[in-house]
Length: 119
Image 1: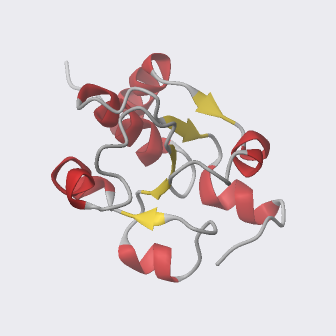
Image 2: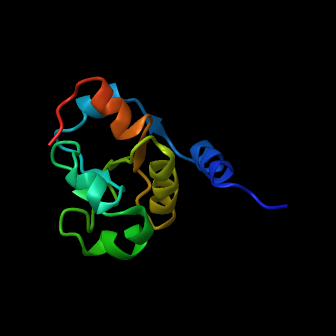
């Protein structure tokens, strides 16, 4: 039996911690913010101070980013457009040692709809 992308997201969400946009907003200072959307999405707007590493290359690029290497002991806030890619990315980060990574439920879409700051 095959599974869908949404099945994978649902499974990932059972294994990770999701935080609300409100909680993410309160934690912006002092925590790395990781945007796993594509570069064009990031260029159109992103959370203040976010680092962009697309989901498709995350495992290959995270240790080469100077702001994220050796940050396995930090809570990294991960987000995408609506929360699916960030759930998958957070699960992958846990597997490679970033066990405090959390996914922002609702993603950039919800963040923007609430009128929070965007760069």
